[in-house]
Image 1 (tube, rainbow, N blue to C red):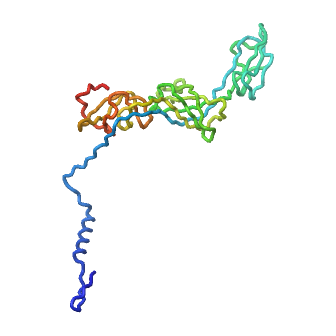
Image 2: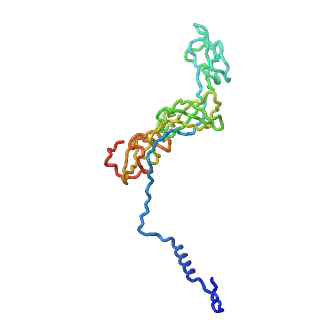
Length: 295
């Protein structure tokens, strides 16, 4: 509201134009914003370039500490037990567990490795034959068992370069020597439903307890000064892949041979060269007529 005094009279002028403009604006906003017509909304994917660098393929998986399976110590000769160690006690490696008197003399039965004698299957004066069980030993050794998702098996088709384990609330991370990777099968079970596990051995100097959780970093491969792209730029995850090359303003499909991956980057063994422009995300395009179709 504006007041203007003309000839002693007070004339009150209302901002009619402003008010009507506001009303028109409010009406327009209530019915939604005005939309342009005949405008094509297109998003052009980003273009990136193949470059060189070092790649370390490291899988980080969850695992659990497990005790090594018990060992059964058996008789290696026929004879009579003349000395026997008691069960349920800790015994050092190479300690004498029993003595068997044979026709050729006295044969000592030694502890195969440090652990606990869980059970003694014999008594003094008992006659034993070759292969008879004498003791059941629980070794003072542990392994880390790691369930492996089938989706990452392609990254574990060769023996790992190294395995590092961090025990939950335990000692500093340590090297865990590789033991095996296999499917845990039981008689009559469907092999396709068997859990695949990787096993590494906890060093004797590391104090561990069965059942403790652990994080396991598995270095599966390493390559230096190799050509690479982000994994999003390549269709395919093992051996062979396909990407979209940008050449002379055209999008062309190109087959490539793939190497190792660290989950974020993938090695390009052949198919393109350093500096080639490719789409950040593969496009659905026609094959390059100038390419043979083979990387």
